[in-house]
Length: 144
Image (cartoon, rainbow, N blue to C red; front, top):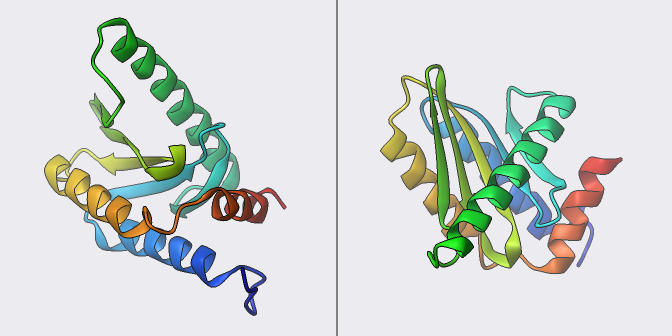
């Protein structure tokens, strides 16, 4: 991967730019994170600070672990998405390529179908670029 002026490859910059656009352009979205399969933050966009993004990464990882266990117990197959519908809003967790996860926190007033649709579009746009090297680069870029 070729480094750019920000110290990130073009692919990493494209990924984080697409994540930021998703957060900014989807009505009602508060925070969005990308999480590696080992539960570490890869990228974030929205209003959350680093500590909140790390906490959301742990929550997303835990939810996926529980949902995956439930799916395995009942022969439901691989996880597609988990939706937490709470009084104050939604948490949508979706599987991405290469074992990565997308976590989206949205306001109660957000259209859940629009948030899920836009999340699916983001995943489709980025699946081709996700590979172990990019995931490691993204994890390293937020750990510093």
